[in-house]
Image 1 (spheres, one colour):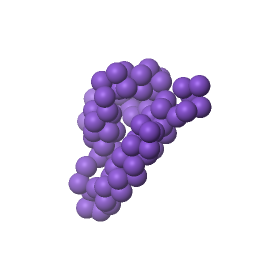
Image 2 (tube, helix red, strand yellow):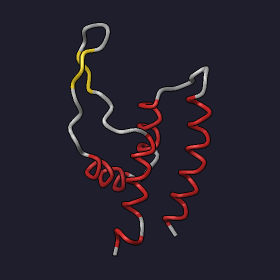
Image 3 (cartoon, rainbow, N blue to C red):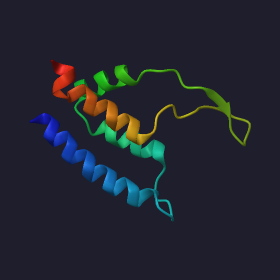
Length: 91
């Protein structure tokens, strides 16, 4: 049952995200990633963060500042969330 809710939320979120990423871009991929994770239950957020925990690479941007490069994209985060809640993973 919860899987159905997550899949419905995923479809709607992807629909809105695609509109936000079209020109003119309203938001960045990183902001959408943070938004979808923050919209989940706190316990589920922690489980998802553990599933996704891989170190990012530090890169230097055009201003000479170091920053952590995005390790994941939005679809990867959603895929891992669905894997966490799927009946196959729970069993």
